[in-house]
Image 1: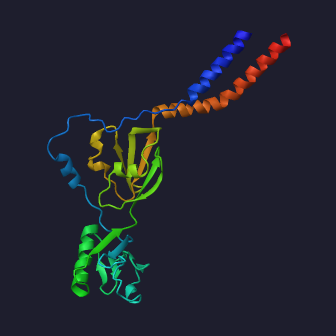
Image 2 (image 1 turned 60 degrees about the vertical axis):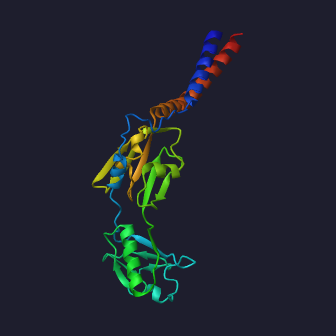
Image 3 (image 1 turned 180 degrees about the horizontal axis):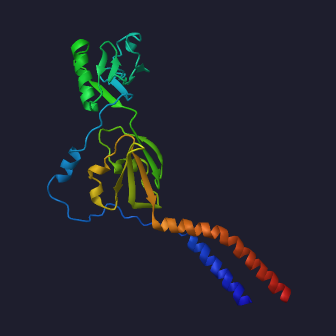
Length: 262
């Protein structure tokens, strides 16, 4: 009976210790094939299409010539909201359904279909003709974002502040992958609910850094799956939650039975 009791206790200890083991060993950016000496990777990145402004986008426009970096700061508050009333908080403008943005003094200007750089230059040239001398206009699209979910240290929504942002950059901003992440199981979900597209990325391959498919677009959802080891550990821990009370009761019963037999 004593042998059975000790064997049960040892089994319980081993089971609990095994279930708590959850250390992961990630392997990132391995060179799986020889890298070409040419600039092919750079050329592939150059072919990635830039985002083009759409209706309802929110633009932040600033005149960098002004010491306070305010857009057309020498205009009166009344003229800063001419026409359609698209201006919000002075520097922020929403693109209307008619493809235009309503700007101070110059009025409606078509921006839909333009890249950020194209719209910036168009607005800068426009103000240079009618109002400012050699203006330096900065334009940002502030509503673009990507959602990071899964085994990431800091999940959430992250803005796309650059024209080209790749997956590695944004994961770095989010603190990187968690210890439970599977670096080979990363999915970028893109498109509408009716026509979703799933792009798979393997971060164990160094080629994923410059892969055009890892360039993010506004509205993308990035999901990082858990490793098989982490999944097994979760299943084992769930089982141990059920088994541990039973083992405790069984051991207690054995001890009581042994004391009574004495």
